[in-house]
Amino acid sequence: MIGVASIAVTVGAGALMTVADRHTFPSIGSGLWWAIQTTTTVGYGDNVPVSVAGRLIAALVMVFGIGFLTVITAAITSTFVSRSRLDSGSDTATRADEQLRHLDERLERIEAAVSGSSGLEPRASSAGAPTAEQFSEISMRLERIEAALTRSS
Image (cartoon, rainbow, N blue to C red; front, side):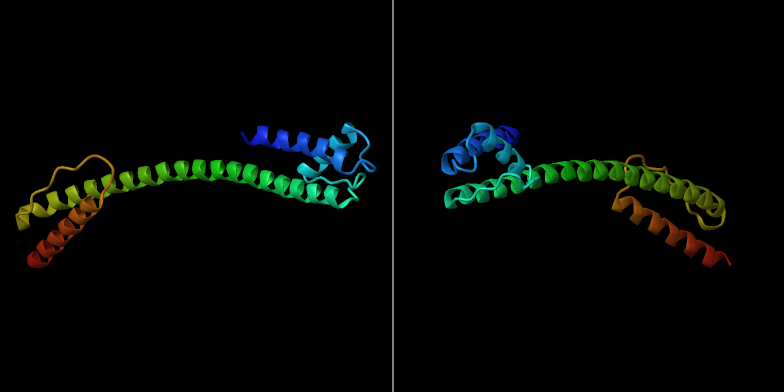
């Protein structure tokens, strides 16, 4: 859609410039050459409108060209950013899941070692993505282990 609009504005501006500033742009080809330069913001300066109508058309085409390039740049940047977020988001979740499993395994070993003297029972590890509940459970388990170690010493 953006490409179609860009081509339409470029061709239309080239033809319109030939009509509005006939002295500087005597042919459709010279008008199109100017419109392509202006829309793409290259602007060599070899063809410049001199009439008021030509300059108004030029101003509109310049604004359109800058807007077009901005939209294209934003779309490309947005694609890169969303891709980066997807990649880093899955890595973070995987690392957190691995850390939670590792902590859970360590707690089970500690609870098993302490269970003889404190009456603590090891718990089954929970699968799935780590949640705030799981971290809270680990914290409570650590508190019980600390209490059992304090009582036994």
